Amino acid sequence: MINAHTCQLALNVRSISTSLKWYESLGFSFSGSYGPSTGDIVAATLERPSVTLNIAWLVGRDSLAQLELIEFVDPRPKPQPEWSPNREGYGAISIVAFDFAGQLERFQREGADPLLFGSAGDQSMWIKDPDGIWVEILESEPFPARIVASGCERLSSIRAVTLTVRNLEKTKQFWVDTLGFEVADEIVRPFKPLPPALTGGASFGETILASGPVLVRLLEPPSDAFMERPADYKLGDELGAFNIALLIEDKNRYLAYADQLLEGGFRGATPAPLALNDTGLWYGYDRQGTSLEICYVEPDMVEQCGWKR
Ligand SMILES: [Fe+2]
Image (tube, rainbow, N blue to C red; front, side, top):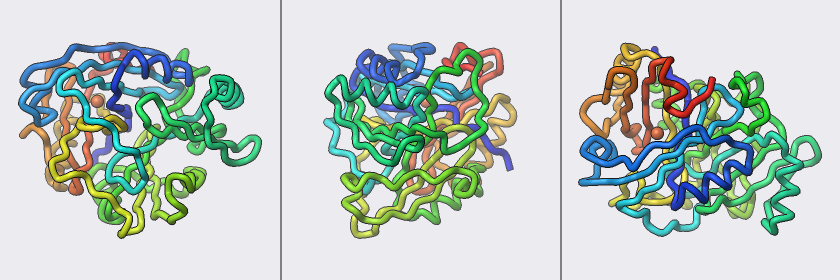
């Protein structure tokens, strides 16, 4: 069984410059950009006739983990419906703040009104980013002993993203048996429940999956509340958390991992993984239609692709 490392959380944003400013203030550091990206390969990867997009990366405290901001220039994203944890797909993101008290004070000074939970030392706050993405900002680390990237000691960490699914057990099975994640419920300090303002007080099934620094918080809403993606949904249609990427730093292992995924029922957006000389990527979907990217980067290309180690 090959496994890979959660190296990236991608967000579909309306404006890279607006989001960069917001996430830099939250304790992340700009680490590179790419674009405009267009042409057959990117269109095939996104299963669209044509696409033009810009990309920027930010790093946090953890080695080999980045936020990827994707700005669709053409087509433009549809207006964002209000996010709810009942909505299928990736949703809210969790950040461990480098300076929680300073961030809280800044938001209050700016007139933002974060939802606050917990008591001193173990607080969290929920706030929307400029695109309406809910961000849970944590004071204390739920997942200790991460490798800190050199020079990034004073940055915040990208720690988790929620993923709402219809069937938690089926999703868990694929992510553990085929993608190589582990169920981390016992090594991760429990996250606080989602804010009642978002759940309406309903209780959700929840499991934490880990395969690297960015955790996946699987959520299963009550079945009568589950909101399916629109039938004509295409990746990138909506602003918000877009997908996660899994990294392998070796081309042969990456290709073998792709085979492992295909055997388990992964559907590639392109028939085969893309592999250039020193980088490669493959977009696709798990058995329930959740988008995933797998990628490989030769160790000496890591910084050029916007990571720090
Ligand atoms: Fe990506």
